[in-house]
Image 1 (tube, rainbow, N blue to C red):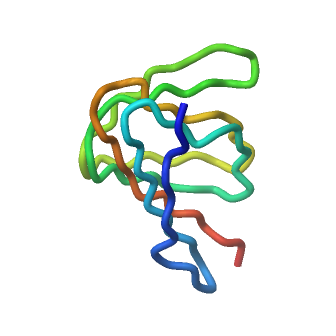
Image 2 (cartoon, one colour):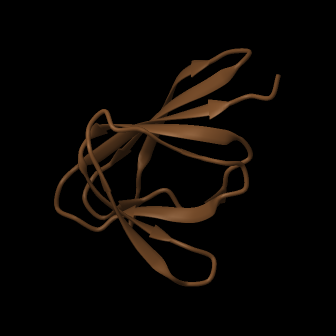
Length: 95
């Protein structure tokens, strides 16, 4: 799989906002979240999450419908579809 692209849009005292763009057949690669975060989809689609235990979850995201996760999540996010998917990831820095 190709690498998904990321662009940091904001990095200030309280948050980091990164735009993640997933062309078809791309992935983030394995990573562990070091901060709590919120995801806000900007281009709808389906992403597949690979978990450390080897299981997968299909995650359908819709434009403007956010979801949040806590620190410690570990996964590889993959776009196994033929369409581009994109979201903003907003990481919350500790106060």
